[in-house]
Amino acid sequence: MAKCSVCGGEHDLHEMEPSYRMPDPVLSVPPEDRADCVMHSADWAVMRDRDDTCRRYFVRVLMPFDVVGWQEQCCWGVWVEISAGDYDTIGRSWREPEQDRSRSFAAQLANSLRGYELGEGLPGVLRLTGAETLPTFHFADDVLHPLAQQQRSGVTVADVERWLHEHGVLDSAS
Image 1 (cartoon, one colour):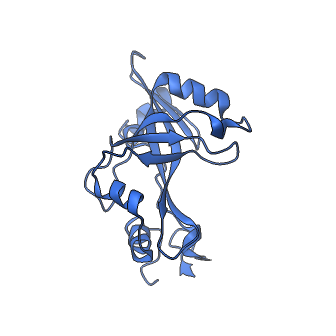
Image 2 (tube, rainbow, N blue to C red):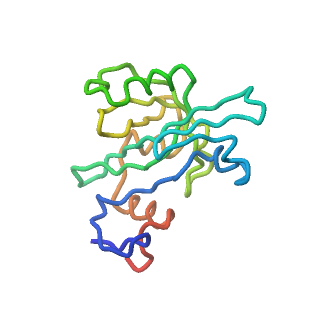
Image 3 (cartoon, rainbow, N blue to C red):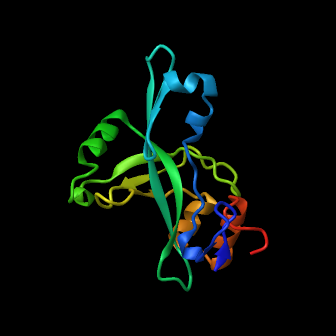
């Protein structure tokens, strides 16, 4: 069990995840302009410029990692940017029971990742996983970023603990 710095409760490490509340581009919009330029929910965001000549589309996803010695994966809650057409397609099938059988979608990471240089803009694939679960994001095979390599090869419990500390989720005393 580990102490959560967010709620103060004790949780199994399997229940904790590094996560981002919004895509970085949305957070870069001045707070006084967000009501006019951003529409969002907990899992979707659409950002437009002031003239509404450019829109960007985002989806919250889970970025899974196999952990040595665990049966469960550790997932980061991150945001990815997708095309307008894919946003519409995903939106239409979001609650469909068999949506996990649909094709995968090109996506780019929309968060800079604490503990790693860069991150935002790295390409990958969004896969729908079911009507009651968030989609997943897997880095493209040719991405050589250290986190992409860890996603492909797996991580240790020490890596998970470091991630949770860096994201302020795991209490320093844990």
